[in-house]
Image (cartoon, one colour):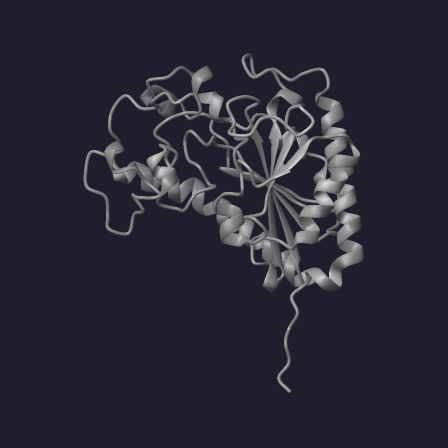
Length: 296
């Protein structure tokens, strides 16, 4: 059964925080026609999901901030891309000139419509039509970004600034950097475009909070932030965007995709993180908000 909407916004009873949370890759509704068009079984398609990330952050509304989540999976359409990052080799006709066919993400097979899943296996049996791509972009991509812009704008108008937290998960193996300095695994990677998408103090507050809970955290390697942090992060004008990548092994079996017994602990720790970040914003709002310059 198709969901009523491609997205869902979980709203707080009362908006008390400039924080906005987004889970762009946790969608798990696979349209039957999409599965039928794929050369892969559903289990293989799901390897690209950020499974349960929306659930890990589900307590955010109770803490005074909204959570935006997609219901469709990234294998169907990836909202953390430009609207038209498309691989011409996937289509049965020439693409319009405005399409970005040369980005690094397209070259890696991970454009707005991905060519491969996380296991590097090809998704489709045959080539697609551009009309199919446009239909997905219109029905999923545009509503997601329209909602995200509205949430950011609402926070900015209410508080004078916004902190967007883009929530993701990462595989536990195969990363360019998968060992922390003390020899343990990396639990989370914070991406702020190497300081370009949010104030350093925000990243430091997140890192400090997670470190106090004994998580191993690194910054910007191997994930510095994707399209969302790059496109929306504008700290000079009071919009701060930070990406959080969570090691899937902390909360799920990466083979069976089942939750681990300590899923609840991680979810509770994330709620503590959100509470700490909300408290941080309350005490640092003057340095995080847009500073209007007056002519003198």
